[in-house]
Image (cartoon, rainbow, N blue to C red; front, side, top):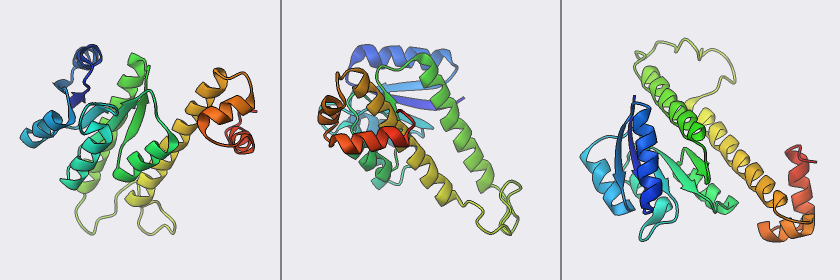
Length: 202
């Protein structure tokens, strides 16, 4: 089980999410803004911080930036209904673990938490392998074997592509034409057509 901090200035979302995560057996604290969240992280270690992007004051990206500047290893997931690709790129650059796109289901939350906690456990197990001893699942004598850095980059790339694909699907579903969808996404129709083709959406 993990220690999780929920950060959202909307009371209903904050409390309902906290109650659900507690029902899964995790320890949960809540914060109404980024500043309060930073104080909570200073007091204790959390396995995961789940924060809304749009809040009064610092906001989710600002919170993420502050945590990374403080060398915090806490995983951060951002919640948003208004994600843009530039915003996602900035979040991944700062080290966000993933996005939760509103509205999300309880299963989305449960699976994401399990993924985060499994990844952190795996990382801790890897870190306890004595120096000079090869990790059993990552032989050092294999040319091109993935390193932690390349695996992290791959996870970030996959998360960003998934975010973009989901955003395109959402906009296309609510747009009468390809041109209208492209205008809403802020790209030209040819670029949108290429992206749809790349993601197998034709």
